[in-house]
Amino acid sequence: MSVKHFLLRQFAKHKMKDVPEGQREQILTLLEKNPELFKKIGDEIERRTKGGEPQTKATIEVMKKYRTELSTLMNK
Image 1 (cartoon, rainbow, N blue to C red):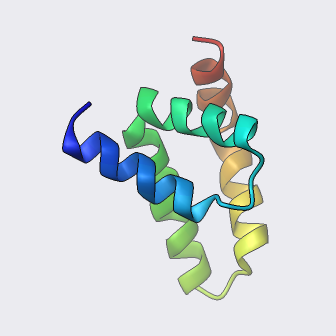
Image 2 (spheres, helix red, strand yellow):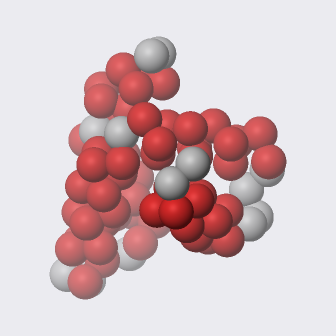
């Protein structure tokens, strides 16, 4: 495991401390499979929230937009 991989995993665990362990591991696995997709999702959510949209609404809308890519990733 590379240092970058380890640090990313630790950061994600810290940010998702309230998420149940099983779901957290599933998300971390998806993140490891396609980190670029999650960076793109995060950037878009951040852009929308900075534009004044509530974070929850921005997250839901962005996740809907990338539903197909996420579904494909989950089925790999």
